[in-house]
Image (cartoon, rainbow, N blue to C red):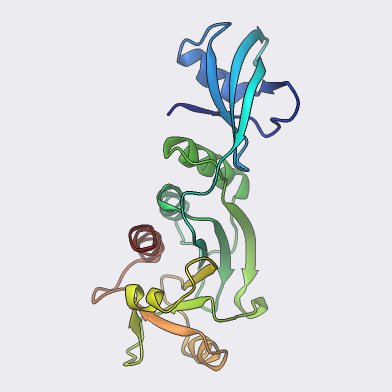
Length: 232
């Protein structure tokens, strides 16, 4: 399914911006051709190209439908950004393709980076949902300090310390309401500090294991997205 994006699909007509218009031209679309357009909020519209005007394309909306999400669960990933931007961006792109609904970047005691380029991540997210034929853009939250978060029973904590009470991710998911939010916490490359882990436990956050191997931050985030996509 070849999808284009326009954030405003209300009314009978719309305008594709410069970037989306460029995609149309690369694909040799002509006046009168029908295309499929999404707004990132669940709308899928069949549209007809009316005219090329400068760097924009004017389209007529022929019909519009509201698409349901392809999954029942809502996956919210809380993750510390990696030192190299390209690693966290790669993880984010693939997690969106697998089924990520929301991401919040966290600053922890061992964090090496405390800035995120949200506008770049928004472009990556848009490309990812079009590539994977999805209709909803994930929510991207700015960086927050870990101690500013409030925890409830939707949270699962992935950390590297030895702990006999840890459940495997799949086992932990079995006991959760699949129609509500599932929030997973992933620490930085140096993991959460012992004090932070103790605070999680005091807040009744359940610890999980992501397997026997120690995973990089971005690998752990992607692993969670893939397991949820396959399991729920």
